[in-house]
Amino acid sequence: MEKKTEKTFEEKLTRLNEIVEKVENTTLSLEDAMKLYEEGNALIKDLQKSLDEAETKIQVIKDKQ
Image (cartoon, one colour):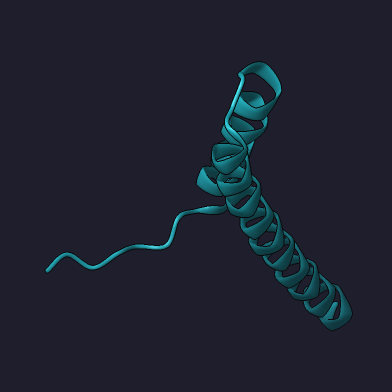
């Protein structure tokens, strides 16, 4: 069984951009639009968490100087 690997920040951001592009430039059913909205919202939360963690690490480094 193959282990599922976590996507990188950049991969998540790329997927979010793909979702935005699809929603803005195509006609979607309500069901498809809702699925993309849910996926995009989860990505936004995950990306924000990554940014918050990076900011915390940077602050720790700055405080040690």
